[in-house]
Image (tube, rainbow, N blue to C red; front, top):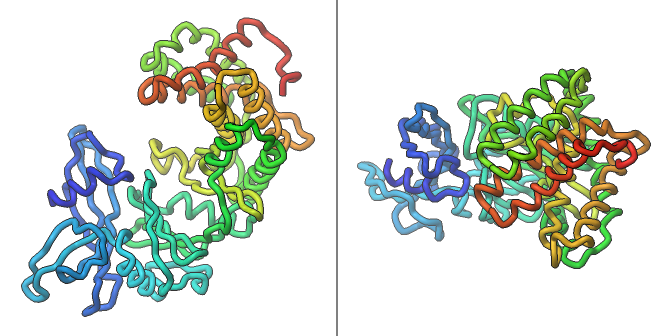
Length: 424
């Protein structure tokens, strides 16, 4: 048990670091691989309990092998089985041979719901991506990604749910199969977009030279609008009270003021900004929920939007709730503002103009001939920037001015009212 706790403590996807959690229960599932074959692979669901009485469930995908047969994956613990002899246990995603054995077994497993099993080759090269912060992804050959969920909750995973609803969309990767057992979604197979470039890295490289990327930003706006339109048809719409949203944003602001003192002198002006939402009824729907440049890929075929799991700090139920699509739009506008950190001088007029031009191009692509609801969009942008201020104060104080400038600008607007409809 202690070996696995040590493993969790260093895993990037483990959300409980430093909180004093201990493994309180382990539920082992049947072996996926045939009896008598090596490596033997199965899932284990572990419950991590914390001193404050809350608990989380994590998915350990483990491979058992005879001692000395591991293909380079770090050994997490050792066993001495009375029938099989000395065994070593490894994290299966880090062991290519174990992943080949697992993928072969899953092709005929009742734990899989396939839409296109022919896309997955169990004999292909397996390579685990490093550095992920929420899950683990293994590349299967050149064209397939196998995403293994780590922190799991009962029921349908949001990423699977949304990708299934959008499986005919050119703006999202194709979903090939979903993997579920014991009431949990454990992972899925999807298309690896050929020639894709991470949009955050692309935007930072563009910012460093003030490259003109307005055409691509406009296309990204079009892609997000297509995704929203498809989700509206597939899942439906709802409505929400603007007054309730204003109350929620003001409550978050008050909490943020405690954590980030630079917000305190701006508080009353920002409250007036949020008060503008009262009396309105908002159309709501399923959205991305955590939309920024890091959730997009740019390839020769255009834009692909990925990772529909929503904000990691929220529960699945909270992330599944309908919200205004303008929340996603605001998230991307804030992301362009962050990309200017790669400019030679992020505070220079040229850097501010670069970020603004790209945001305007993205908004034009999203809106087309429609005008955005300015008060609502401003509120979501400000709410997101307030969250960012708190994050930077806690983690990267040198970056605090990036989101704080956006918050200060909104406070100034409320102190010196203008016709916002002329600004967007």
